[in-house]
Length: 432
Ligand code: KE4
Image (cartoon, rainbow, N blue to C red; front, side, top):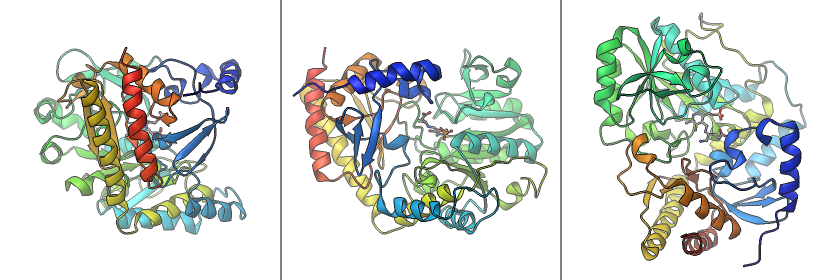
């Protein structure tokens, strides 16, 4: 195996750190969790990414989820090019934002009205503000290990004990903000019942990733989601599903379709923008009637519903609405997960593989892994060595053990076979 050239990335990394905090525009890209110099990419094509040194990689990050069709998917690139010819932004209403909203409302029955924004963070931040406005209550519940973007009241971690008020995970977040957030362990409905019994009259909502994808991949235990539905309903709190990652990923109707549990409000992002900046939040008509200018909860955005982004989102959702898309995604993901399991078994490695549809995670840990405490037993140094061994073999996985990797419709049989072989070699090469 010839050594991978990296000097162009290394040079750009030097330059980037002189003008961008930490050299990146989003922390995970700095490779802090896996060590080494970040790869700077030049272009994507189908299942592949090509870096500035000309190295090719089979891409399993997929821009952290949006690129479910692969890079430069013709329906998306053609739609964006056609929109670009007519202008980039008007700051006024267009037919495309109505069409994208219609596609979302038709795809997700619990969403009767939807507001388009520019990121997942904006979607979750706005959904929580609506929940507080609709209920007149201040506190929120979130699960430890779930990530909902970087709004102040969501950058909190549990203090000691099972159910505690949050403490800031970031400087710049006042204790008063974090103190409005109650933390519970994922997959623990009793902790939610306890929180609601103690603070129910002041809890506006519980926000949750219905399939946790930011502490590695942790599926909901049987009955967990329906228990949360019953508990929040009983106490008059709203149930918000953060489907920024799972929306249009694990089913056309998202995790709520897959598990048959209906939230009051849903947050979307990633796929819904086709690789361009779109987030969205929506839900019951009576709840969304609170949103300005119809109601008193203010939320706005210069580029919300942007013509290029809505063109990309419309093209992507239309492709995903076709027959057998999710069966194809699941099939390829299952083959890769099985291939890794066999390679790990052959190498005598203790791993736990989690998969829901085309979301996959390989923990270097013994299972079961049902919450954040379990996930953090993973050997992150082992993951880092494995990550780099794969990189040297032309496979780009997420640069963190606590992320999920994604399969796209562009990953064909040869990609699957090559990846499994690379995994087998990388496990052996990085064992110590
Ligand atoms: P953005 O603001 O990054 O568009 O979305 C925030 C967000 C909200 N909810 C969920 C479930 C999410 O996964 C995310 C963002 N996901 C991370 C990766 N796990 C984005 C990568 C990054 O931060 O660079």
